[in-house]
Amino acid sequence: MQYSKTEKGQQAFKQRSPLFSACQRSCFILFDGIKTADQVLAATAGLGATWADVQHLLESGLVLALEAPRAEPPAMESDSASPVEASLPPTHNAQARYTLAKSLATQLTASLGLRGFRLNLAVESAAGCDDLLLLLPKIEAALGPEACQELAHALQT
Image (cartoon, rainbow, N blue to C red; front, top):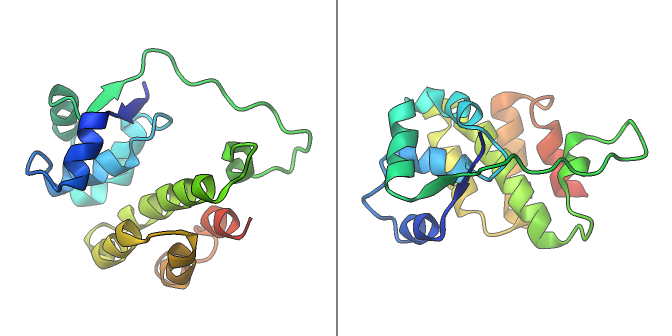
């Protein structure tokens, strides 16, 4: 089942509310209405996130479970389309690119665990695609260029 942020959760996150532990903040960042709890927990396992953290977010009303899975984007004509291209909205505007790239960068840096803590903080504070593009070489150095292909594509499209 997919989970999405609530308005209450977004406000608490912006205000750095004590309702969030470090693990719960990391989980909260990744909940986008597309990822399942298992995917988020796998990405934050290095930080020690558990199902109890997800339960806390749910019980506090910071995230909510979506009733039905979101519809898949329409199939692309070319079979060579990357998952990043398929997930970009048709308008392909800068805000959508930034949202997608930040989500990908957060996932990548979260997979580093404590080793990537500072890099994860830098990604969180990135204000736009330009900031994320400046962080891309550091992320590639930590994870390798193959792991960062989707992020690089999202930032350069």
